[in-house]
Image (cartoon, rainbow, N blue to C red; front, side):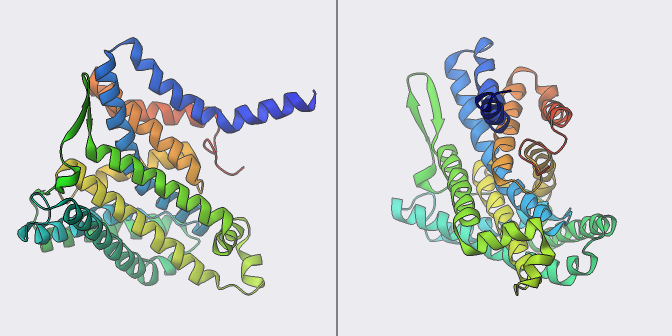
Length: 333
């Protein structure tokens, strides 16, 4: 076999995830009008970005720390509620739905910042108090973090109540752009941009910075990283906090799109995040991004065409990917 053939097969192996995404994008054109197709595609891409923000933290935490955190969805929910609280307060001052463009962006930024802060605080408490004691034991990790998830949801109900709460959308993100018969919601474009930005920043940090090299080395061999003088425990804690903060950002972004927050919102997204992580491969940020696009697009298209099969189609995609590549699209061999 020639070297050119080998390189060609390697390129196909690395890029067939994108080929599947492109196929998912084009296939529905056979069954629906173009304007409907475009609306569903933009919505699917945005939905995929909400899932990506949750899944990427989950994937990296497992990839580096070998920790199965079943409470990850609670970070998502707390992020949504923290953002909702800040936005509600600012709405009382007229900054959100009736404010200027600058006030709208400021309220959005403060809402995201609140989500990051609560995600870091919760992540630190959970990692230091609970998860640190069960490193290396997957069964105990699953049981103890699942219990923590139930406790955190109950805390949400105690603080904010058990009912759904309506979320204000900053005026700058409200409304839609209309191109002929195609309607594109402004906020969904913002969500897609945020997701792509997170992907770029995460990849640059992992591949171009010293801390990124240390983290990647820790994924390959924790003992060597510890032996050359780096405190692997601090690295673990830092990665866990970043993962928790990303999930909280996802919750804040999702709340603006959903226009509400509710105690069970994290549990719903956690299911999608697990599917995405399995599709993309544990520890792979790019894999999580591709998997999130697949899940978001497939869910939206099938929800429109065959609603009862919406969640089932993502599970089918996951099963097919695992049959082809048991480690996921970009999972480490």
